[in-house]
Length: 353
Image (cartoon, rainbow, N blue to C red; front, side, top):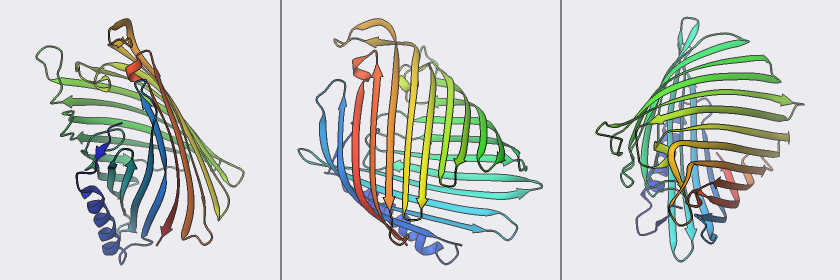
């Protein structure tokens, strides 16, 4: 876990809340139905990595989410979403983490098709469980074809990851083609193919060449409605990442296959339940797995990651929500230093303005 001590001021939360509240206050007069959601929750987080003894962290968090959408005179649609979350953990001292998100999306008519222009920013000033402080702007430019049953979309998308502490900056640019088939409200199918290029200016590479890589990914999924209240989705994807980098495992060459699934059930307006899960297998082409003593095992590294998450919420009036969340994750590998697991549970309140 990359947890950071509380000696640094919680600028991430302050900035994030100011963004959310400021945007909501400004756009409330212009939006069709602006949304502001405030949340306060507490629970516990248990984790173990690299064979270490499990560590238990009491957890508290406060978050804000703002959303806005409006229709332009020419038929276009503009939407803006902002979110900020601060986590507090306690063991021998206080640990703060945060995460902020901002996304602007514009849909414009282009003849019988639709033009998509989007830009966003994800970041953390204090770090997260998975990463040190970072900032990652991203962008998308796409064209969607019309159609009730069949629809196609072409996108150019990319992002730049700025990671000042870990020296792991990454520029990624890709082209993505997707095809959607919706024969009815009860069943939909989607398939996609993405090919991208990455550049890692701070990474060591083989020889004198700069660290670069290519990624090819294919995806297929199903989604639908069972009865009147149960929404479900199942997605499978796989791909190949080739790179001349020699840094962390995610920068090197590997292939992967994965599956994700979701169930959402809302039998009436007061109760909502959600369950999600994933499984992913990664196999590296050159990176050697190590033994518990740190020596090469003679095998290339492979890892299997599994996870489950669930959420239940109840509301008496559609404004105040009582929520219960839980999650579990496990990573298995033929290298002890790559193995880890975690459990988490949270109880909290949300209020929607």
